[in-house]
Image 1 (cartoon, helix red, strand yellow):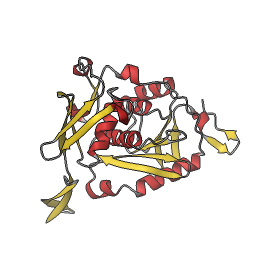
Image 2 (cartoon, rainbow, N blue to C red):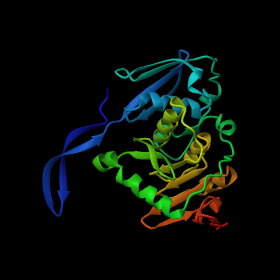
Image 3 (cartoon, rainbow, N blue to C red):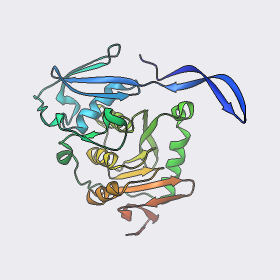
Image 4 (tube, rainbow, N blue to C red):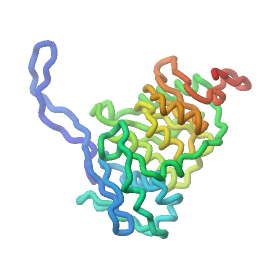
Amino acid sequence: MKRETRHISMIKYEDGKITHTDDEIAEEYPLTIMVNDEEFATMVCTPDHLEELVIGFLASEGVIRHVDDILSMHIDKGRGYAYITTHKQVNSTSSNKRWIGSCCGMSRAFYFQTDAKQAKTVMDDFKVKPEDCLNLMKAFQERASMFKKTGAVHQAAIASREGIELIFHDIGRHNALDKLNGFMIKNKISRKEKMVIFSGRISSEILIKVSKMRLGFLLSKSAPTDLAIELADDLNITAIGFARGNRMNIYTHSNRLLIEESTELDLN
């Protein structure tokens, strides 16, 4: 199994003083996905939960819908390859036409043309109290052990009103979401009344990824972009940013927020 971190020697400068010390650094691992003996994509990721990552990625790109669509999977961790055989032939023509986006570099910052087909309006009517959102974000931050070690990973979680149910991290923000999605697909976990909690900014790529997961509530400690807000509005996703301490900004579909048990918060 690949390590997630490694220690390196470094020189630390602080208050005019030089110190020779060690630092814990996040591992960066290239993984090439082969689908039906054809190269489909190469991503750079944190080398843990690779099976969930591959399943979530292929589902996000429309290659599979269910885990049963995969006939076989073999991950060669030493060489950095994932070999997947699907029941149906994959049309790889559209996968070669990519749009370069704004995050995570060339390795993952692209859209497949299937985005337009896979991103659907989310109909879940999940509602939650604002204070529950803030408590969930606090719990999410408290569990950010890998970020505290390295400062170099993103984190994503699935939560219900009761608390955080799943949590994954990765150097790529898209990868963290794909690991969540892959785990849910692999274990056939219900999406009903669930939200995504996220450490990074809400970009249009992230918003589309959440839409493909069929989840209608995205809570982040960071800022959104204007296109992400437009997409969230169109796709019926509640987008909340800057959830920190006792405050947060509700950008879209505030009808999912409750002040009292029977009172809806309407900021639109």
